[in-house]
Image 1 (cartoon, rainbow, N blue to C red):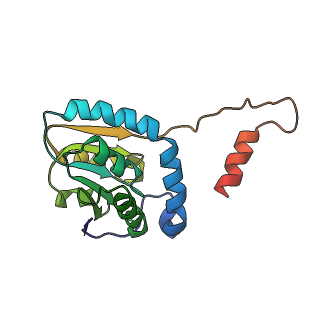
Image 2: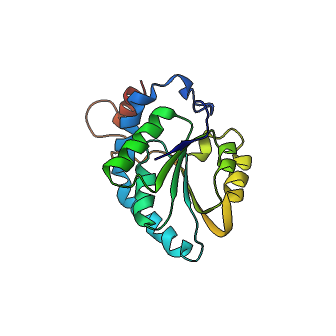
Image 3: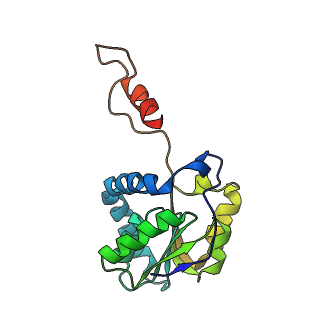
Amino acid sequence: MSEQGHGHGHQHGHGHGDLDWSVMGPVMEREAEVSLPLYREIAGWAAERSERVPGPVVDAGSGPGVVAALLAEIFPDREVYAVDAEAALLERAADRAHRTGLQERLHTHRAELPGGLDALPAASLVWAGRSLHHVGDQRAGLAAFGRALLPGGHLVLLEGGLPPRTLPRELGFGRPGIESRLDAAQEE
């Protein structure tokens, strides 16, 4: 596992510059692991479409490397680059690669997005999962993701939205809006 490039912190306007990534890393890892079935399905779909474009795979904004490791499994003959600005998160990605035996093909690259992609080889697939909103100029970010692709390559762009709601606002007891209160408590 190699770490390339350099950078510093997520600077994306969400106030995350002061987060302790060694604490947030395990939380982010668990959240990504919960979504692995969905990510596996999307990655399989992308792999089918990327067969004719040999080249590396880039996880742009990889966080702790859960998806980067999944991509290395789905694309067994490709180099995979986990790209993130946070060293603590890339350390988790490197640890995951070692635990899963993927360290020969899963590389880390420490860089701010989108400029840090320029130092990597052109990719057959760029996976940008919940990372575009961290880029200050999102149009420039999308353009950079596109420039990072080989001709015929694919961009997988996953962003959030409103959090899913599973409880009705009014349960018939207590104060209404329990999920909103739980979200506020978690945020705090």
